[in-house]
Length: 400
Image 1 (cartoon, rainbow, N blue to C red):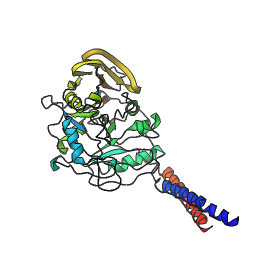
Image 2: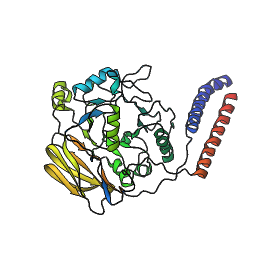
Image 3: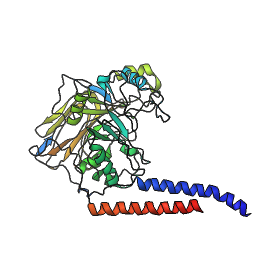
Image 4: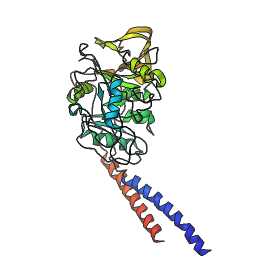
C-alpha cells in the first residue's frame, strides 16, 4: 500500500512542479515599470488636423495588406504557403503592397528586395496582446507571458517604440483584457488595427481617440490561410503613395494619407468572380478639410455615410449618396467617416481632430507617461519575493 502511494505521488509531484514552473515564468516575465497614466482628455485646440492635407489625386491609391503570415523555416508555422506563394495570391487580387509580418521574425521580400519592409508581429503572450513593429533591424523578444496590468502593456509599447518607425496595436477585439479603461490609458503607438472580424464599429478606436490618444487606422487580413477565400483580400488599405518603396510608404503612414476597407468575399469560393470583383471596388475620389468642414466623395452611391465622434457618438448620417460634408461644432473633438456600400464594402477614414498647429505638427504623439518610481520599486520587489517563494516551494517539492 505504501509503495502504491509513492507511485501515485509521482505524477502529482510532476504536475505540481509544472504549475510552479509556469507561475515562475509568469513572475519572471512580469517585470515592468509602473506608469502614472495621464488623465483622459478630448482633443482640443483652435485648429483641425487634416490627415489628407498631402492628398494628390493624380497619384491615386495603392492597395496594401501589412499583416500577413507565411510559412517559415522551422517547426512552428501559422501558414502553409511560402512568402512567394502568398505574394502571388495578393497580386492577382490587385494588391500593390504586401508586407510579411510573421511572429517574432523578420521575413525577406520573396520577389524584389527594393520592396523590402522590415515588419514583424511582436508577442508570445497568452492574451494575444500583439503589435506590428515597422522599421526595426532586429526582433525584440521580450514579452510578458500574461500582461495583466495596463502598465505592462504600456511598457511593451515604450520598449518597442525605441527601436522602430511605427507601432500598430493589433486586433484589439481579439485581445484578452481589452477594455475601455485600458484603451483610455495606453499611448505611444501610431496605428490601430481596425475591423478585426467582429465589428465594423471600431468602438475601441473611439475609446482611445476620445481619451486624446490619436492614431491612424489600418485594416488587414491578418492572413493565416490563403487557400480560404474568406480569409484573403477581405480587408485592405489604400495609400496615396507614388511607389511601394518603404521610404515612400513610411512618409504616407506617418502623415495619415490613406484609408482602410472591408471587402466582401466576392464569389464565396469562386476565384474567378473574386478576382474580377476585386478589380472594380468602390474608392474615395476626394477627401479633406475646408475651414472647419470635412468632406468625402466616393466613386459610387453608398447606402450610408456616417460621421463618428467623441465617445463613439454618431454625429451625422447621410443615405443613398456618394458625397458628404460635416462642419465641426465648437464641442467636436474629432470626426471620422465610415462609408457603407450596398454589396457590403465598408470604407474607414482616418480621423480629423482638433489640435494647436502652433505647438505641434499633429495630434499624434509617442510620448510615454512618466514612471512612478516608488510604485515601480514596490511592484518589482513583490515580483522578486514571489519568485523566491516559488523557487523555495519548488526545491522543497523536488527534495521530498
